[in-house]
Amino acid sequence: MIHRPRYDDWSLPKGKGHSGELLPVTAVREVAEETGQTVTLGPRLGTTCYQVPEGEKVVHYWAARPTGGSFMPSEEVDELRWLSLAKAVDALSHQHDRTLLAGLDGATAITHAVLLVRHAKAGKSERWQGDDDLRPLTTAGHRQAERLRTLLPLFGAQRIYSAPPLRCRQTVEGLGADLGVPIIDEPVLSEDGYVADPAAALDRLIEIAAEPGGTAAVCSQGEVIPDLVATLVAKQAQLQLPDVRTSKGSYWGLFFGGGSSAPLILQAADYYGDAVD
Image (spheres, rainbow, N blue to C red):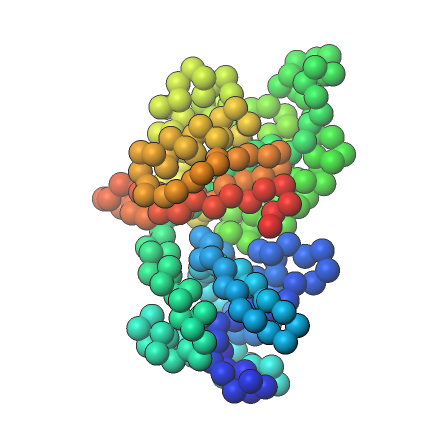
């Protein structure tokens, strides 16, 4: 919680996006500016809407874990407090902030995560004359890959896995270079591998989530991801996903609880489309 002397209120960190800035980038930047904390994003918590003199204000929130930093008072924020949920509900000044905290309890149970990425744009398969597995990213696809290179680390990506096609590997190779980690081939998560054995692909995704080393980014294909996510949700979660989408260059944040001796169970699934809203 932060105290803003201008309004003399206690609220949750938030702020306005810069021109052209994607919302997850805004979230991480604003938390750092207001609290001094670097964070790793987790599941979405939802949005709040309320009236201000300029009209309706909409704020998007994520659960996040601090990874470092220290608070320095400023004219904008002069005090910071870490409180339990129960104490925060009593201390927050605004009802829209108190309502938001209702979803935080489940988010604190997250222990593992997978960022399931659909490869970026690679042109039309019917226009490609060679082996389809060698079809490369287009110029637009490389732009999408650069955007993913910025976004996936915000969610803690530390390990990288990819279906074998070149367009999948190219989508995450910039991220791999930044992290200094290898890209591990996952044939079972390709379209051919998934058609051959969907159950093995689902088991492998959960195995990847459970492996040590932090959050995994997994790049796959459009004929895999919707069915894989829908099957995972149906088997494990009490989630309502009316439309399991997967545009090129998009990703799903899949957040699990459990581990060690307990099986991993899906707790949240968030979709980030091509616009990454």
